[in-house]
Image 1: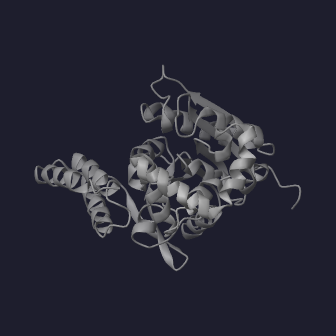
Image 2: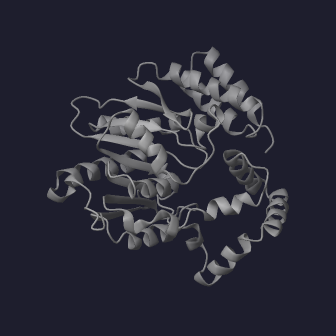
Length: 344
C-alpha cells in the first residue's frame, strides 16, 4: 500500500485548527487507515486519531479501559445506558481492519436504547495490534472471556460487526456468559462463497504453500485492492509469508466455528447486496445453528437504504432492529438463558 496518509493528515490538522474536531477525527482515521501497516507512522497516526476522537466526543460519557490479555492489553471503552438502564450489557467488536471508535455511532444508539455498552478490540485489531503487538487469533472466546472477567460480568450480549460476526458466534459457542449473540453479518465459512464442487480443490491447493505464496504475490502486484488485503493480513499475523493469507481466511470455516455449539438466541443481520459477506453466507449460517435457542434472520433491502455491508446507509434502522431484538428475546420466557448443553 502506498502511503496516502499525508493528504488526510493535512486535512485533519486544518479541521482541528478550525475547531471542527469531528471532521478532523474522520480525516485522521483515513490518514491512519491509508498508512501502510508496517510503516513507522502507523502508531503515531493511530494515537493522533484517538486524541482527536476524545476531543470531538469529550461531552460523551465514554470511559477508556485496557483489558489485561496475554501479557499485554486489549483497548476497550464503556458507555453507560442513556437514562434508566433498562437493558443489560452489550459487548461490541468489529472485524478485519476496524477500530472500535468507528462504531461509536452504533454504541451511542445502543446506549440510547437503555443498554450499557462495552466496545473492545481483540488480538490483531486496532490498538491491540498497533500499540500492544497482539496478533490475530480466530479463537475469539479468549478475548471475550478476558473482557467479561475484567468487567466482572456474568451475563452479556455479544455483537460482532463485519467479519466480527464470525468471531462472535465462535465465542458464543464456548462462553456460557454470553446470553445473546448478533452476527452483523455472518461469515460461516469463506468457502461457501464458491461453488461446492470447487471447495475441496481449493482446500487442497492451500496446502501447497510454495505455490500459494507465489500466486498471492503475483496477484497482489496486479491488483492494488488485493495488495491492501494481503498487507493487512500479514500485518495482523506479523508474517512475511503470503501463503499465510489464504490460510488465515480459510481458518474461518464451519468446523472451526462449531455452529452446533451455539445455544443462545441468535440474530443474523445482512444486506441483500452485501458484496463482502453476501446473503448466501447468512443462509448457510442460519441452517447450521441447529442447537440455538432461537435464530432470527433480518435481510435489509435497497428500499430501506440498508442493503450494503453492515447497513452503513441506514445505521438508525439496523440499530433499532438490533436493540428491539435484544429486548424481545430477553423478555421472552425462553430468552432468559442459553439452552443447556446436554453433553455437559
